[in-house]
Amino acid sequence: MRSHIVNVIDVEATCYERDEFPAGEVKDIIEVGLCTVDLNSRSIIKTLSIPVIPERSQVSPFCTALTGWTMTKLKRQGVSFAEACARLRNKYGAQNRLLVTDSSGDVELIRLQCEQMGLPNPLGPDHFNVTTWFQLVTGDLKNIGLDAMLARLGLQFEGVRHRGWCDAANIARLFIELHKRTPLTPKEG
Image 1 (cartoon, helix red, strand yellow):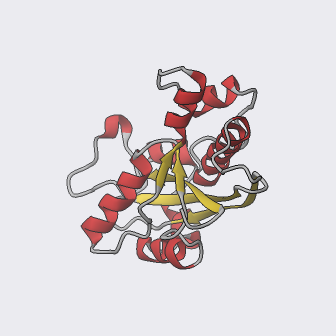
Image 2: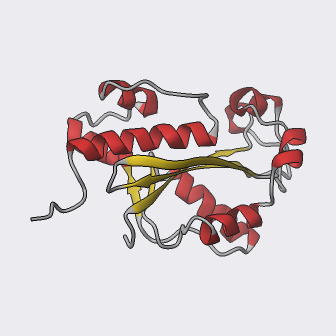
């Protein structure tokens, strides 16, 4: 980790009921939610959404009901996946900052889509799974989901579920609360 600023991300992707994609379509990232956290102040600096126009699949009605995104909305507000990766790398220092997620799935999805599309992975090597930390701190080794982890620490989910920026902000809140209870940074003195 090369900075006291960490990036918390959550991605949303095209989806179909029972994960059954039509022939010729593959899962595409449609939103990267990003939240930057200052470890020194234990505070959220910025939360944002990078909508992504899917290139290899459509946004199904099931996906719209889950995420709120439509193909029309993404075409109007979104950028290409390549541009989203460039923003993560160039504007938000993703190569040099610790990346925090609540699972390894988001990191794997970005890596896989980059590989499939011939793009460099915008994420650096340092990844921290806050769910694992939660399990170590609480001793609760069941996979209980973000809402339940927040509740266990006396917090409630804020915002809209399955919106990347809301999920990232809630993951950041969980990370900050755990950091308050078990700091990652060495104490001075």
